[in-house]
Picture 1 (cartoon, rainbow over the protein chains, first blue to last red):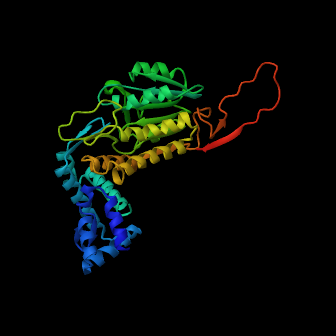
Picture 2: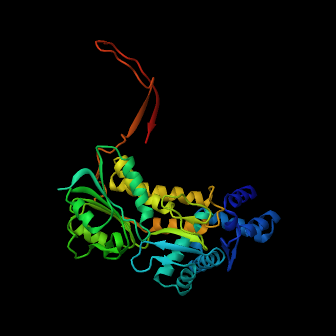
Picture 3: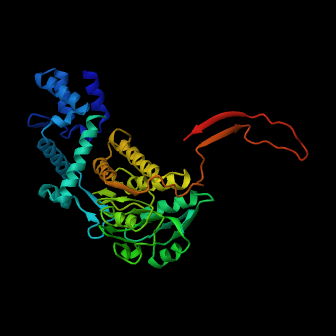
Length: 131
Length: 259
């Protein structure tokens, strides 16, 4: 994957997404801004991130530690709902309103609902690798 | 015996259901004969009365749970083991609600419902940031609020059914495609930098993930729906033939729009 392709990927993402952890490598999560910066500097880390992103775009997430991906998705949800707190509303009989605070609590506690929330975020992460 | 091309829309207007009902009303207005849309205010008695006209489709918005679906004022309407569970024999039941695909949807199919579309977990129809007031029904999404994209995606299934003669499988694909359209707007499209983008994107993905269709997916409830599979645009667009005149009129086919 060339620098040009990394740049194209970077610029296709929204500003908020560029500064949110998206690319896991080792035990660390890198934002697209960090990935692009390292790739531009042509550092060893940059080359590793470049090949990692290329592999992820090709659908190689199966070789990732699932626990790592899980933790990153969880971190992303908590970050977003803390920085951009939204309220969610559904057609559920018993609890139609879900505040950002309640959402975060469910995610941290990894209740059944919380786990489904994290799984959806993992789907989003995978799609963002491929934009 | 349900009547093909006859559709019942249950349109409650309280408890947040006005957002979906607004889109239902628009679709009902857009639907030309021979498809007939019976609209109710979503009250139990009104739905019961409309069901006597033997519609082929029941499309309703309401709060739900594993085994039940409610209508206006959150009054119970369909429940596993309840009195109406076998009222929908031979019909397509589309429930814009939460969790009904877990027990109620399968039980409807067991009781003879031809096909069902619904959601296996919650359907998040809106999200808004901070203290923003809620939008009006049918308002398009803005920077801080989206009470439109998720509902518009689900309604696309009925647009396909009523206007494009879709099978249940095609209706399900139309819903998925519409979800993906809205997802793209928030991912790389013009809405990607909106403050509420991440949370709206999450809602869309969540609903899409848990969309379910059950039963006979090849079933076509409105085979006489509005639009044919193709459209021929003639040039000139109008031709006058006088009484007693005969002969051949030559027309040029300018455009063929394949759908």
